[in-house]
Length: 292
Image (cartoon, rainbow, N blue to C red; front, side, top):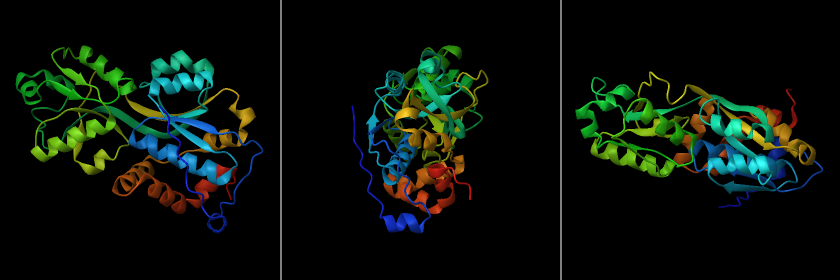
């Protein structure tokens, strides 16, 4: 499934005023970037698409596709880049399988985290860690269900493994989508129902609701993660400026969280514009490597 997202062209006068004069590489091929419908993925992908289209002759096609197919697509050369490689644990299987056919440009942000969350109104003395899910009264309150995201997501794979690690064989992991998962959390909050959902940081859900991660003593869901940019082999020859841009791209995690909250309150496009306007020096460095 594909979706072409044409970012609006910012007026040259505004770019110059912000100190972001366009850089024009010779190549003008369309850059195909895979993305998944996760809040952080949409924000970062739209940010990069905006910068590429506004500051080069390239156009960008954002290809909405499952994370497993992103790895395959970049490895085959059907996609030029993906910006949501969670390492070292979440996508470890994909990384082992495709590493020799991908170019890892390093982390876009660090300090990310996966886990299972519950609303803060769920008493800690009843449910504070994943092993507590085995308590009969907790299982009944949760109807033995855990709400998840995409079937192909690394978080889903790790969550399925966690059910085995903690011997929660009577629970059902309901795989759906990020949007469906957050909708279930919202409904549970309205009713003050108990719920367990698969989750990750950064995500706007932590600004919207008071949630806490369940302790994971066996580390079945991994630890701190880094989110990397991956590109196809040979992109440095056909679109070197794009590769340099992605290699320099780095966002502090707190800024990712703030931008995601803005996107939810308004739109992703407006949040991207606001981020670029607030950080002209950093964006200038991404575009040109200029530290002055």
